[in-house]
Length: 357
Image 1 (cartoon, rainbow, N blue to C red):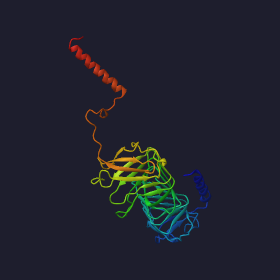
Image 2 (cartoon, rainbow, N blue to C red):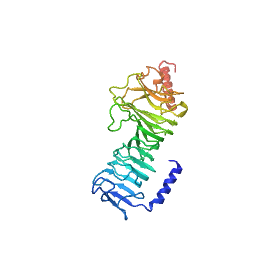
Image 3 (spheres, rainbow, N blue to C red):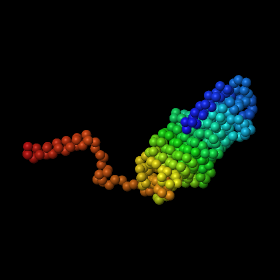
Image 4 (spheres, rainbow, N blue to C red):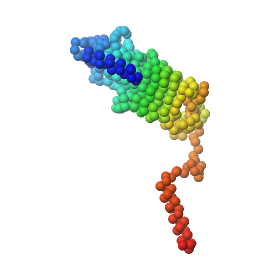
């Protein structure tokens, strides 16, 4: 996050924290958020408002909620969801942050003037944003447990961060302002979201600003046959920094035909790409599918106007020829010294047997 943005939210938190009451969802009456009978609030508050912290706990009577507040209603101060919630109805907004622990599903649009955080939980749990996400800064993962999010659409370009142990798949309706995949984070391309119709395009997104993969991060691409495969479009720049490329074949028993090509990333012109994937230093380098031994692809880093990162199915590389020096492991200096001594000793023994000494 930009330092100025961080300072703004810190000041906002300090200014409103003293005024905030906490309202905990009980669902004692029904699933509607506007019903005062569904809330237990501190102070004189009966229904949460724009200065209040809203908590959706795991022990509420129902975890399926409907936001029936008017669309123009004030944003809550903060919103925190325990695992297991589904949210529908009108847009749900927070002024500072919304924190979600999966599993979670929203058909209601989610809006935050600050952060929208997806936290990890032991055993995982998918967070599926089926409604639009807008104005927020999305952060997936917190480095403590696996966090998996699928985002189908955005209403405007939002900054996106995939932190350690976070995994994010973005749909064709997503435009990110920037994309930062940190060490231990994974961006999944061509990953079908729950309920995706066969043949539909999945796992595709556009980033208007910089795309950065840190060393230790992963770009995972699914070689789909049941859906129209997606791609990442980087409109500004993309830095790979030795990130890992992982190829997952949808049907290992029926992989792509030899010569079949897939586009993973489009980035306009070659000057926008810096760095390479780990172990794939140049076009023509080979990578084996992670779940299909013997299924190999050749990677291509496009140049000039053909600015795409693509993979092409190739035949398995032949095994090293017998006696090929490349197949003989190199010896460390200590090993070479030992081998020299053994060879010298064997020669001396032969000379003694022949009567030379």
